Structures are given as C-alpha cells and as structure tokens.
Length: 137
Image 1 (cartoon, rainbow, N blue to C red):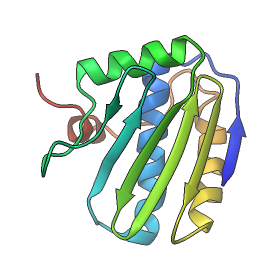
Image 2 (image 1 turned 45 degrees about the vertical axis):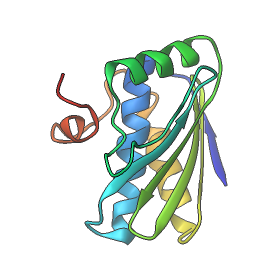
Image 3 (image 1 turned 90 degrees about the horizontal axis):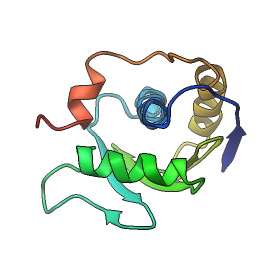
Image 4 (image 1 turned 60 degrees about the vertical axis):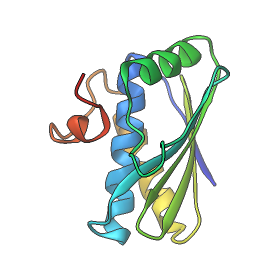
C-alpha cells in the first residue's frame, strides 16, 4: 500500500473525481482497455455496490453522501476493478492510499500523479470521463 498526504484548496467533490480518474488512468496502463468498474464505496451511512449487472455510478445521492463524509473529516474506502486488477483506495480530505493486487508498480504511479494533481485548485480531468461514472439524471 502506498499513501499520500496533501494540502488542497480543491473542493471535495472534485477530489473524488480526480482520485477516481487518475486511479483509472494509471491502472489502464497495465490493464489496457478493460472496463473500469467501481465495485464498492463505503460511507458511515451506506455501502454502495453495483446492483446486479448494472455499473455503480456516482449518482447525486452517492456523491452527496461521499462529500458530506469527507467534509466531516471521515475517510472513504473504495474498491475498483479493471481487467484482472483490483484496486483498494481510501480517500480523505487530505490523504489518499491505494493498494493493488496484481501490479504493485501501479501504486507508485498513482501516488506520483496525485501528488502533482491534488495541490492544484483545478486538477486535470478528461472531459469524457465524467459521463462514464456519473449517470444522466
């Protein structure tokens, strides 16, 4: 497991999106174009998992719960899969930790990139990423 502590003026919703985007982007380097799936997000109020064969997406309800949890100073454990790789992440308002099962070098790449992105007020995100993880409502 690799971890990062950071200071950031970025709002917590943006931190969530940046964390998920760069976790996906760096894991895709070893897993190629395999689908990226959010398999679990835990808050004190709820554990969010996909419903059957549906993908777990960051609905307004899920995002609100996650942001309120981060605002309260609580960490958010999340789990993702891409190809054969399983990534376990813990995000808080000022830290990020990641552990992977298959390719440990991914951990270092993710931490290195996020150490550059989290201090920015407006971190880099690909415009096509948001529609893939946020449902149309």
